[in-house]
Length: 245
Image (tube, rainbow, N blue to C red; front, top):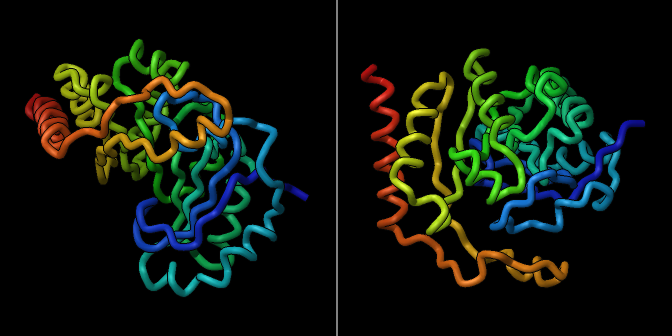
């Protein structure tokens, strides 16, 4: 029997895709983002093992909320594509049984072709682009952004729907040229239904302390509303530059 390694679940998610959603957080992530508010999801061998039927039993009591709100199932993490086979089976089953909308919340750091079957049963990809500049991305997460950008291109080339999300940390994401380049990249893609800037916060710092990990962004404040709106303006300017070409 196929099992997934689960970190946690939420039955009434309202920010993880359209409508009200069941959100399943998978265990395991290969990125080590400096601002991560769930570093307890990183370890690949932790979390709780659950079968497909056990997860489906958690979803079923709330189906009416998901259907009437235009919601569905979102699988997040950690990084859900590290358990692509399990997630693919789960998405296939919720579509077969209940015709639920499926959303994959991913950082894009995966092995490319190995997730194509999963993407075939995914209605929406919420792609978390950590940084448009590769060197800055490596410093921020420990890995290159090459795989994330490649996934975005694949989704665009195959007419798949995506939302792009971008956490904004003062001092890391405020360079004008980076924000313009982010906009230019987004503007070059098909299928982007939504772009969101997620203001950095410190709500997960206590988890770093509990795990005995040093928090490298100690003392970094959340961005002001003015900083966030400036970032939106620059990204939009970059998108328009592509549209005018």
